[in-house]
Length: 152
Image (cartoon, rainbow, N blue to C red; front, side, top):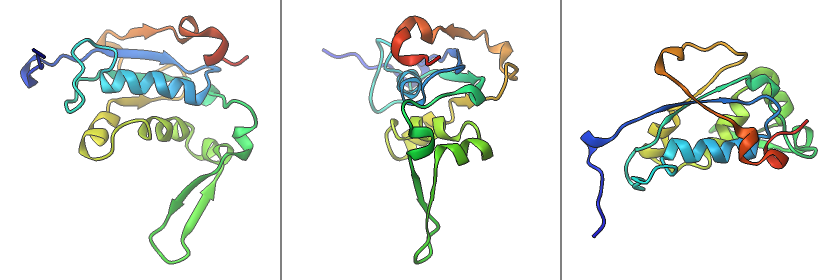
Protein backbone atom coordinates (compact mmCIF):
# COMPACT_ATOMS: atom_id res chain seq x y z
CA UNK A 1 0.00 0.00 0.00
CA UNK A 2 1.36 3.41 -0.98
CA UNK A 3 1.39 6.07 1.71
CA UNK A 4 0.76 9.67 0.72
CA UNK A 5 1.84 12.68 2.71
CA UNK A 6 -0.95 14.96 3.86
CA UNK A 7 -0.80 18.73 3.34
CA UNK A 8 -0.21 19.45 7.03
CA UNK A 9 2.74 17.01 7.12
CA UNK A 10 4.72 18.83 4.40
CA UNK A 11 8.00 20.43 5.44
CA UNK A 12 10.25 22.68 3.39
CA UNK A 13 13.99 23.25 3.66
CA UNK A 14 16.16 25.95 2.13
CA UNK A 15 19.15 25.20 -0.09
CA UNK A 16 21.89 27.53 -1.31
CA UNK A 17 23.72 26.98 -4.59
CA UNK A 18 26.70 28.96 -5.85
CA UNK A 19 26.36 29.30 -9.64
CA UNK A 20 29.94 30.42 -10.18
CA UNK A 21 31.20 28.78 -13.43
CA UNK A 22 28.26 26.34 -13.44
CA UNK A 23 26.65 25.26 -16.72
CA UNK A 24 23.05 26.47 -17.02
CA UNK A 25 21.29 23.28 -18.14
CA UNK A 26 23.07 20.98 -15.72
CA UNK A 27 22.43 23.35 -12.83
CA UNK A 28 18.77 23.65 -13.85
CA UNK A 29 18.26 19.88 -13.58
CA UNK A 30 19.57 19.89 -10.01
CA UNK A 31 17.41 22.87 -9.07
CA UNK A 32 14.25 21.45 -10.65
CA UNK A 33 14.62 18.17 -8.74
CA UNK A 34 14.94 20.03 -5.45
CA UNK A 35 12.03 22.38 -6.21
CA UNK A 36 9.74 19.48 -7.21
CA UNK A 37 10.77 17.44 -4.17
CA UNK A 38 12.17 14.51 -6.14
CA UNK A 39 15.13 14.33 -3.77
CA UNK A 40 12.77 13.30 -0.93
CA UNK A 41 11.34 9.88 -0.18
CA UNK A 42 7.90 11.47 0.24
CA UNK A 43 7.72 12.70 -3.38
CA UNK A 44 4.19 12.87 -4.75
CA UNK A 45 3.73 14.15 -8.32
CA UNK A 46 0.50 16.08 -7.68
CA UNK A 47 1.64 17.90 -4.51
CA UNK A 48 4.08 20.72 -3.86
CA UNK A 49 6.51 18.92 -1.55
CA UNK A 50 9.63 20.69 -2.81
CA UNK A 51 12.18 22.88 -1.09
CA UNK A 52 13.34 26.46 -1.63
CA UNK A 53 16.52 27.12 -3.62
CA UNK A 54 18.63 30.28 -3.38
CA UNK A 55 21.08 30.72 -6.27
CA UNK A 56 23.88 33.26 -5.86
CA UNK A 57 26.60 34.58 -8.23
CA UNK A 58 24.26 34.22 -11.20
CA UNK A 59 26.31 36.70 -13.26
CA UNK A 60 29.15 34.13 -13.50
CA UNK A 61 27.07 31.31 -14.99
CA UNK A 62 28.23 29.59 -18.22
CA UNK A 63 26.76 27.83 -21.25
CA UNK A 64 28.38 24.80 -22.86
CA UNK A 65 29.71 25.05 -26.40
CA UNK A 66 28.76 28.14 -28.41
CA UNK A 67 25.23 28.33 -26.99
CA UNK A 68 25.88 31.70 -25.36
CA UNK A 69 25.94 33.33 -28.81
CA UNK A 70 24.05 30.81 -30.99
CA UNK A 71 21.06 29.63 -28.93
CA UNK A 72 17.76 31.45 -29.55
CA UNK A 73 14.87 32.13 -27.18
CA UNK A 74 11.54 32.87 -28.85
CA UNK A 75 8.48 34.65 -27.46
CA UNK A 76 5.33 36.08 -29.01
CA UNK A 77 3.83 39.49 -28.26
CA UNK A 78 0.29 38.38 -29.09
CA UNK A 79 0.05 40.56 -32.18
CA UNK A 80 0.20 39.29 -35.78
CA UNK A 81 3.83 38.90 -36.82
CA UNK A 82 4.90 39.55 -33.25
CA UNK A 83 7.49 36.80 -32.81
CA UNK A 84 10.59 38.05 -31.02
CA UNK A 85 13.91 36.28 -30.58
CA UNK A 86 16.88 36.87 -28.34
CA UNK A 87 20.13 35.10 -27.46
CA UNK A 88 21.38 34.17 -23.99
CA UNK A 89 24.10 36.82 -24.40
CA UNK A 90 21.54 39.64 -24.83
CA UNK A 91 19.28 38.18 -22.16
CA UNK A 92 22.18 37.93 -19.70
CA UNK A 93 22.99 41.63 -20.14
CA UNK A 94 19.38 42.70 -19.39
CA UNK A 95 18.41 40.11 -16.76
CA UNK A 96 21.27 37.87 -15.57
CA UNK A 97 19.10 35.17 -13.97
CA UNK A 98 16.46 34.86 -16.68
CA UNK A 99 18.19 32.10 -18.70
CA UNK A 100 18.43 29.85 -15.62
CA UNK A 101 14.85 30.67 -14.62
CA UNK A 102 13.59 29.75 -18.11
CA UNK A 103 15.53 26.47 -18.05
CA UNK A 104 14.08 25.52 -14.65
CA UNK A 105 10.57 26.63 -15.65
CA UNK A 106 10.62 24.33 -18.67
CA UNK A 107 11.59 21.37 -16.46
CA UNK A 108 8.63 21.89 -14.12
CA UNK A 109 5.06 20.75 -14.83
CA UNK A 110 2.76 23.16 -16.65
CA UNK A 111 -0.18 24.80 -14.96
CA UNK A 112 -0.84 25.97 -11.43
CA UNK A 113 1.49 23.49 -9.71
CA UNK A 114 4.49 24.45 -11.86
CA UNK A 115 3.91 28.17 -11.28
CA UNK A 116 3.69 27.62 -7.52
CA UNK A 117 6.89 25.57 -7.53
CA UNK A 118 8.76 28.18 -9.58
CA UNK A 119 8.17 30.76 -6.83
CA UNK A 120 10.50 28.66 -4.65
CA UNK A 121 13.47 29.66 -6.84
CA UNK A 122 15.31 32.77 -5.65
CA UNK A 123 18.11 34.12 -7.90
CA UNK A 124 20.63 36.80 -6.85
CA UNK A 125 23.67 38.47 -8.35
CA UNK A 126 26.69 38.47 -6.08
CA UNK A 127 27.20 36.77 -2.73
CA UNK A 128 24.59 38.65 -0.67
CA UNK A 129 20.91 37.70 -0.38
CA UNK A 130 18.17 38.32 2.23
CA UNK A 131 17.62 34.64 3.08
CA UNK A 132 20.45 34.04 5.58
CA UNK A 133 17.94 33.60 8.46
CA UNK A 134 16.48 30.44 6.88
CA UNK A 135 19.43 28.21 7.90
CA UNK A 136 20.43 27.37 4.33
CA UNK A 137 21.93 24.00 3.47
CA UNK A 138 24.76 24.50 1.00
CA UNK A 139 24.69 22.27 -2.08
CA UNK A 140 28.22 21.66 -3.38
CA UNK A 141 27.55 21.20 -7.08
CA UNK A 142 31.22 20.49 -7.78
CA UNK A 143 30.97 17.31 -5.68
CA UNK A 144 27.94 16.02 -7.59
CA UNK A 145 29.71 15.65 -10.94
CA UNK A 146 32.77 17.89 -11.23
CA UNK A 147 33.56 17.26 -14.91
CA UNK A 148 30.16 18.21 -16.27
CA UNK A 149 28.61 20.80 -13.98
CA UNK A 150 31.48 23.26 -13.50
CA UNK A 151 33.27 24.82 -16.47
CA UNK A 152 36.62 26.54 -15.94
